Amino acid sequence: MAAETSGPWHEVADRVWTAVAQPESVSTAVVAGTRGLLVVDPGSSPEQGRGLRASAERLTGLPVLGAVATHAHHDHLFGLGAFDDLLTWGHEGLADALRSEASVAEAVRLGVDVGTLRPPNRPFALATGVDLGDRWVEMAHLGEGHTSSDVVVVVADADVVFVGDLLESATPPWFGEDSAPDVWPATLDSVIGLMASGRVTAVPGHGSPMGFEDALMQRGQIAAVAAEIERLLVAGVPVAEALEQGGWPFPAEHLAGGVRAGYRRLTERGVRPSRQLPITAVD
Ligand SMILES: [Zn+2]
Image (cartoon, rainbow, N blue to C red; front, side, top):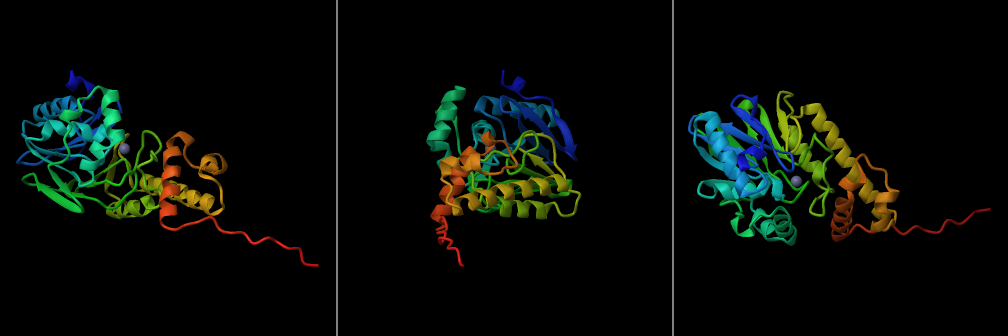
């Protein structure tokens, strides 16, 4: 049943637990305050979300007050349907994303009834928060990156920030067709700013928690991808050849969609291949 698709809870900070939910090995989390619980990234289906909800309440003896999805991908978003009688949060772009062809195709592939999926009932453009009693949790869209709908969830008193797939530690970051490689590094600068004390742990959407140096290193690699996409475009390399001709810090299968998205976004911004003047020999 659904509850069995997620692993045991691990307390990663004061009253902050994570568990790995299959089939996508997504890090789902519970944050507790004296009034109740917030669930972060409630799994890949409403059924899994229901299992997580029951499991979180068994774990803490407290009621779930609401849930937040860090971005539009199914493994982070589809479980929100199990919390629609409560408060649910996420970026305002999630409603459109849920109706997209890619999202519907993912639901069909997973055997999830599209009619049971729900966007957040408290969507936000920039930032919001929830009072869990003795603990205030903030949620903020710091900019585009992995998707256009990325939000981070900040538990300031526990020195924890949930970053969705803006950072990943289990596998390299995923640059899909819906990614924004050109602005991803700047968004990560804001995340890294939140971590500047050196005490803050980033919990990625997949994999174990990351410290300041790991986050900074991955920000550098993502910036290298962004710079390489722009270099190739300006050099006149066709998008179909860019993966093969570029030098990349991550495997090609994690980059293909993002290279196309990067070319498209830069072209929309007016970036063009530079015209090389013919070089004439001077005697
Ligand atoms: Zn994702």
